[in-house]
Amino acid sequence: MPFILTLIVGAAAGFLAVRFMGLQANTLVAIGVGVLGAIFGGIVLRSMLLLFVGASSVLSLFIGGLFGAMALIWIYRRFFDN
Image 1 (tube, rainbow, N blue to C red):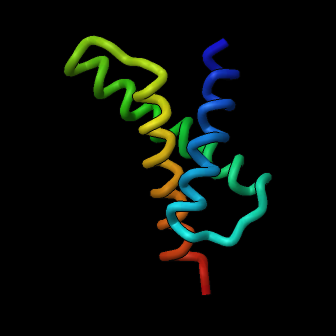
Image 2 (cartoon, helix red, strand yellow):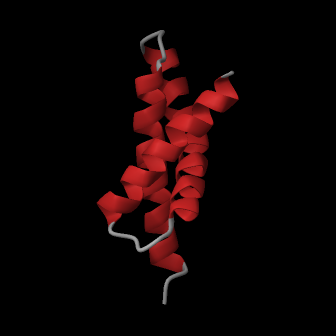
């Protein structure tokens, strides 16, 4: 169940991150970026919240996924975009 939740939240976060960063990408790429961002950013943010506060939630997964997806877009633009 957590994996399916990560996919759903990551898809939403990726869609928003692509729109926020102004990346011209199709829906499949936006979902892929969001899922990767949700996996990396969500894990980092949820573990930090769990460590410091003692709780984690879907909101932390979404925020971590959004920031993770935005970071992936920034890295792509910085190092791979010509």
